[in-house]
Amino acid sequence: MFRPQYLFFIFISSILLCSCATEPAKVTKDQAAAFAIAIENEVRDMKINFLEKNIMLPVFMKRVYQAVDLKPSTAIESEMKKMIAGNSYEKNIYEVMAGKGGFKKVKQYEKEGIQHILYRVHGGGFTYLDMELTNFKEQVGIADIFLYNTGQNLSASVGDLMKKFTTHGQSAIANQLETRLTNISRYLKNANYEFAKAEFERLPYDIRNNRLYEIRYMQILSKLGGQQYLDYQQKIEIKYADDAGFQLMMIDLYLNQQKLDQALGAINKLDSFINKDPFLDYYRGLVLNMKGEPDEAIRHFEQLVVADPQLAEPYPQLVAAYALRDDYSNAGRFFSLYKKLRNADKEVISFLQTSYPGLE
Image 1 (cartoon, rainbow, N blue to C red):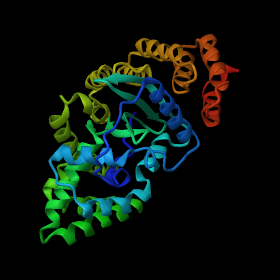
Image 2: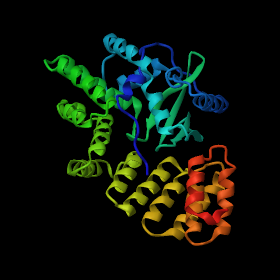
Image 3: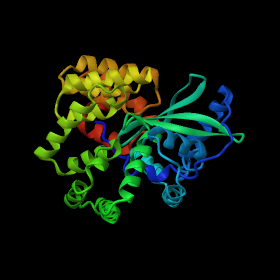
Image 4: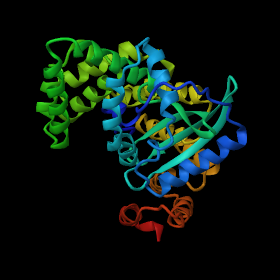
């Protein structure tokens, strides 16, 4: 199941300086390809600043200000400059990868004359990042990122928060707002979810009514469970069910509510929106197993093995599916293939051997 793992205070790891007269140049196809490889290599090497160093901040900040018609402010830029050193976004991506997943280019494409790189992050969950590239002062970098967890460009989400913070900065509740945000971070770090929830609910309504914060609040509620969590999921479903860019979050929401047909629909909408990723066959297979349709599940798992033989996720599913049918010829075949993978999990191998003695 997809587990949303990140996107809390995402704005703190993505902003620095803003205005500059230099106009960005067009990125060539070859430049974009080289940039894509460089990013993958930095993630492979667990570089903590791979986004910080590659976001073209003057270009990005111009997008932020334009997204919400916000006047540039040196005070805002000064605060954001202090925050960027935390590399929160990079840390959260590595958390999604969970030490065993991957950061992989799904495709490179051009839209309206602009080069884009779509990456998939997976391991302890999964998400997508669509990086829009720019060439600023003869350096290729990131102009903006479309986040599939929010269904928005990062500049739009950040801009919305910045405008709201600026508004409250002129009010009597400014100090309270800063205190509450600090408290939320501390409570979450210590897994005090009840306290985090209470502080979150004291935030001004307009701050809570931001996609980044809506997602974080749902994460907090997921740790607590109960009727309020179910009610909030329904609220989010009503608000975003028809938003094509928000389907990644809808998958998890539908699965939590056991709405399996809707979950499959959300997977298909997401696949259509990104214009195909074979990896989504893995999640189709999982949902189809939950629906009691093992033949269809096997078909999708096998399609993924053909499309990407090095992807580990479908192999244990196929081993179990065939072993449960006493088809140890196919179960053994996929088990053998799985064990040869570089990223095969030894604990999974041990579990499969214990659960299905007929494998060896």
